[in-house]
Length: 510
Image 1 (spheres, rainbow, N blue to C red):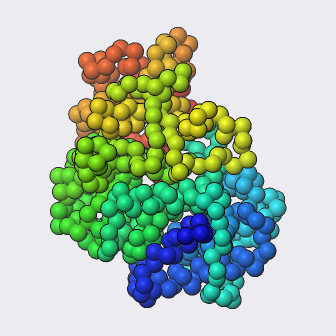
Image 2 (image 1 turned 45 degrees about the vertical axis):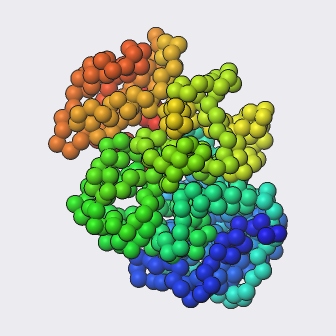
Image 3 (image 1 turned 90 degrees about the vertical axis):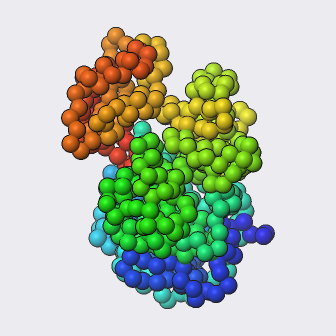
């Protein structure tokens, strides 16, 4: 294939019969593959009619819908750069993203048109359209007047396709630049590694402004020519009602926890599913084991990030690179994917041995080109030999399985010792009555930093913070023991379920 446009590869995988159902929604709508072909062509022609400059950014701040998915595909098809934005973002947040990315087109929900339009005007954005989750909006009105035939724009492997802003759990978000080649190479690897097969049906319950829902899930289904069962938002009962029709389910840990809380989850409901995937945040080992017991399935955990798409995965089938290992291990994110080079280094850039903790560095065709308009920051994030420093800290065991210990920015340096919160959280979460925990570092005059544990009790359980700390003293070195512990009702999270430790650090300082 001479044209490396990601859309060209996805379109080539459409089934021969374009009148088969491609997407079935939770409000009883059915979109055929022909609908996707025609809809993306019309939207691509609309974008082309705007006479946008090469490399123009198309910013999208809308609720999840099939039409929003078509807009993503149309942007690729037309050769422009897609910029997905969380629809929960408010004025100050959107002002930053639009000002930083300077999109030529901004698409928003009609209800937000006034304030979003003001931001667009101040940033010099030329075109503002509306798109709603009920198939209304000026974008569709204008696209309906365009031809439903479109020649896919020619693009190279290294041409920019998407700018994806980091989740911003710590500090200001940065725009990760992903190319057509980055995403297509990763999609093809996952298609093979996860064993996508003819007849697979994906249940899509994830948001579409993030790599998990927009790239990993959607690309997987489209590249396999697979039907999607499309839920606009996650709710346990609708998921369980439709789950027998699916063979692949991708979710974040919070979704699995909520499904486990529903008595309707059992072996029978999950009988046709061959693969459950979890990512975007750590899955507690209790949830991992309970899912096995309740459904008979072992969840596959994987590891990726905005800058790299997917990096590692537990095996879906025997992996010949690791002695035909096929076990999916709870608390582990598995092996580097084929084509990904991964290593652990200490703070001085030296390799660490198996079983030791080190910073995760990666190289591969899936790794991004850099941060939008931040060349100096980009340079700092890569090693001289081209490895991207992920900022995550991990440990590789003797069998080659990687476990994520935490973020390097989350490391607590207490009295000169490095303390890794994820390690402590594992021990706290294993205590009786504990549902979940988070450990953060806060400034301290004597130690520089001290650990503070925030713990959520299981329903009906009563926890004593002092007793938790005493229990840890029999398990961990003294310098790792948090100096304070608080029992809380909930932990702040971003849209993908990641605990926002920056907020906890601020809230629980002295």
